[in-house]
Each structure stands twice: as structure tokens, then as C-alpha cells.
Image (cartoon, rainbow, N blue to C red; front, top):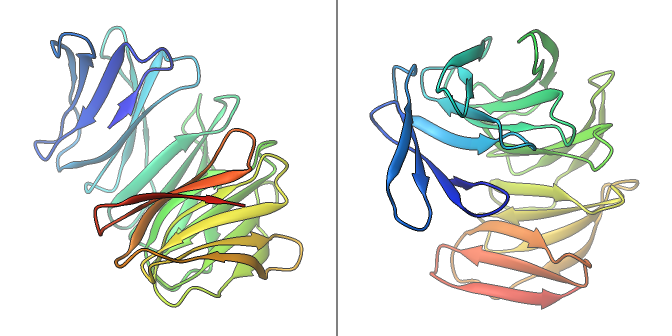
Length: 234
């Protein structure tokens, strides 16, 4: 599920291979985006809310024009289900993650694959850009998050202190820290320069699936499979 920046529209993905655009106030379906042959795993909007990016078990990410529903591009190359896809902050690139243990960086205007990030030993659940988009961080079932240079594809840091799979990893605003959420019931803050965790947050009884910084980064928000959400001071 994704929402437009003004909160007026909501995008959903479904097992029928389609994504749908809804009016957030009335729940009326405004458009249907078709093209995938298996379930849609994620859907996200471009920074300017004019395009829709979807991923699927059919191994492809697809880019649609939001207004017309027209399929603009297909991002191909993964050998298994594509779990997530996001835009770079300026919307010029697309970053995908897959069950095939790789992440890929694409040109959002041509569909050309610019970089493949290889090194994880398990499926990659998601990835995020640093604020300047000079680095990405990937979160994997292999119990690690990895920081990569987007230009060279070189792995800059491996964050390995989690005891189970890492579901989410996001940079701080200055790109110097990474916040992770893990199946080991914890969240951690890592120093990217050293690769070591500087803080560990406990309290959840089951896997932590989501972690986010507050706008001023004085707190973090965690969501867990134990049906709880928790905030912590950093």
C-alpha cells in the first residue's frame, strides 16, 4: 500500500496481478493498472506523484503513468520474485530487490540496468537510498544489511549483529547511520563508517518488521509482529 504525498489517493497491490488507485476519502477505485502475470508485491509513487512503480512475483518491476494507466517501462533482469522497488530522491533511478539475493539499480527513463549489487546469501527484502543517493542499504534474510556505493557497486559496509533476518534498513538524514528492524525482535542503529551497532532497542516479543526515524531523529518508531508499535528515544 502507498499513498500520494497529499494523502488524497491510495495505491494497493493484489494477488490478481493488478494495482489499484483509490480516492482516500470515498474509497472509490479511480484506476486499475494491469500487466503483471503474478501477484503484486509492492507499489510506490514517484516523487512527483505522476508515475506508479510496482513489483511482482513474475520477476519484473513495472512503471505506469498514473493518470492514463499506460505501461511505460518494464525493469527486467531478476531471476526470481521482485519484492520491492523505490525511486531515488530525484526520481531518476529505480532500485529493486529480489528473492534472487540481488538488488538492481535502473535508469528510470530508459529501463537500463546500471548496477547489480551481489553479495547477500539470502533474499533481499528491501533497500533504501542515502539522502544524496550516493549509497544504498539492503536488508536481507541472511541476517545482515549491506551498504553499497551506487556508482561503483562496491560494498562499503556489512552490518552483521542481528541474529535473524533483517526486514528493514534506512539511513539517517546525513547518511552516517543506518537503522535496522529484524526478526530477532530488535532494532539497531549502526555507524556506517565502522559497521558496528551503537544502539540496540528491545521490548518486542516477536519480529520487528518496520523501523523509522522521527523527523528530527530524536526518536525511532518500531512496528512488531506482536501487534505493537513502540517509540524509543535515540
